[in-house]
Length: 303
Ligand SMILES: [Zn+2]
Image (cartoon, rainbow, N blue to C red; front, side, top):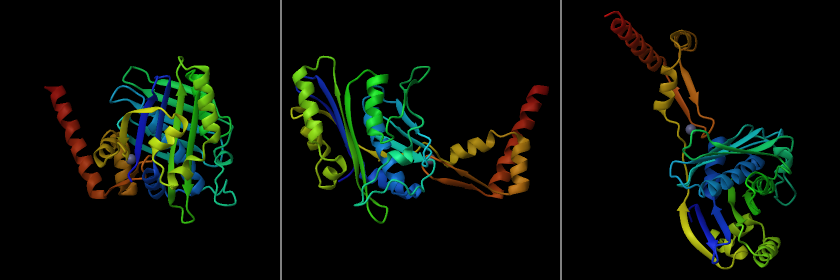
């Protein structure tokens, strides 16, 4: 069972719904960043939400990023996702030992903190991205997003997010759902959704039991009509070439400094945990090429 996202509407079109299973992705994040359980839970919830929100963006090259900065021990939590199902993310402090409850549950709020904000950046190809910011309410993320949708986008919503972590820190199940009421929604439809949400078991237990995202959504919206299913994947935009580009854009003095003092350089990507190593030989080559480029530019200028 790979990670997947389903998106659709109620038969009458008055309720929008999305659900996802992100177990493999959160396991990938756990391994790449060496996340401890509360960090897996916080980042996993944020990644699931970012994927579901990105899936609603209309343009293929759009990007959506969620930044949570609650002043808690975890520090900043960042996840960004694209409508085609790609996601990446990280937590500033992955080794936090807070929030573990008896019986294996995790309280994310105390580690995220409530002294700060949740921000959503939507880049849909316009000049400036859309940015929505709300104060954090509980730090549990699902509740904070419900508040974000109400205040920043004026959409009455219900959000369920969950990550279940095993004793060896691996992720047993992860995923979530978002249900949103359109302005045409009737009183009956609203009370039906409210009632069903109240009765919902925790999303991570449902996923653990093998319930599919589509069947999870049908527990809230029984006449759910699926519009799209999307396979999900971990993907980062970093590469060795990009890292080399950054080195090439340094001032010659800085480049020479690294070459003479450090003799090597490791370029680290926070988002995916990848490190690109540049040896003295690599750096010398970049340096020599830059010298040549500058000499050629000067010669051009003189002629
Ligand atoms: Zn990366």
